[in-house]
Figure 1 (cartoon, one colour):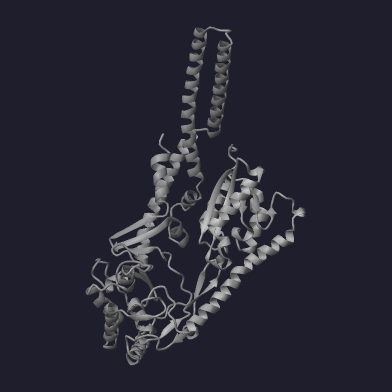
Figure 2 (cartoon, rainbow, N blue to C red; figure 1 turned 135 degrees about the horizontal axis):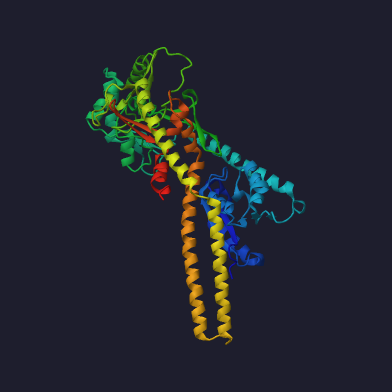
Length: 531
């Protein structure tokens, strides 16, 4: 028989780093091992088993969906025991794993059992080999580092042999049939690459080339490769920009050279990578058929160097714009550029210089002009929120949350008493001490009272829920912070970051703002304070 509200969680994890250890670490075998252990131990008999799985997730950090769901359940008090095959399944980050074992799980009242390590937090520390456990956690933490070094050495060896190491072919090429290590010319896109080099060496600017390609409705590299089925991070619309053209003109693959080791993972646990400087990359010449001759490529390189725009001298300690990463073109949806000048900043859309397709704003808008527009909008929103707060205050004056809870408790006690009386009357009838008619009359009156109190309790619970919603909104840090701004005279980064998600600019006369709080407080205003 299952024990009510007593749960044992079995946690299963597998990642690529466990591949060399064979089938024993498979999710299937972990599951069989742990469930058999539960069946063999009478102390777990009747407990409800919940399973949490992270298949394909590294143990170097705890940002895993299965683990986080299990932790949430534990915080809610819904899990009493966590069972894992061994401590490495729990995690391979030495410090964090020890933190969970020694602090987090004990605080939550959760017992941890690592089967193959013979570890059980139920057993007093002095009866366990604490040093051995910490040593195992240290080894588990070092394991990904050792794997990483071996993988890097293997990858470097492959790179030095001139094999292509990307998952997506270079635009202008396709993978040779039977693998991803060799490139062959893709006639459809190689023609575009040739056209770009030809136009540039004939004197066309990067922007002019991008406009030609957009006018001819040529798919960008991201769009084309995405259409071929490759997983490409596509940002924005299918538009060529001067930056895309420039990256093609700098790509050495077009002269038959493979360039590897462009990036390297710098932090294993987060998979963050760093860009390797060009002089430190691994280059292997004559690895596949060239699309562009070396002479043309070098000519383009010289022109690129000569065409680098001369930057205007701006103050060295220029602060970032308060609208940084907040502005998008309302027409094409792409991020807008904030160009820093000597005296002012201008915001413009790059798309308008290379395509007329979306009707983007020409010329742009001065940052100071945008500040004045946004300042008015911000102050209007602050006034709305202040009015909303006043409504909450008025509602709160008329409610007493603690009294409501006490009233509900009182009603529940009355219902319990009446139900008890109804049961006692039934016993009297069953024992023949009162007639059936007498029993039915009294039972009917008691049931009527129980129904009345139940309805009162339901109404009180609705009121309590409404009161709690109001209280929650009043405690909301975001709302309180916005109110604290008062009447804003000058915008700054703190106000913009707190209040604004995105600014969409269609023209100087049409600017729309997506507020960082609108969904929460519109819902609150419409639904939570209505009485």
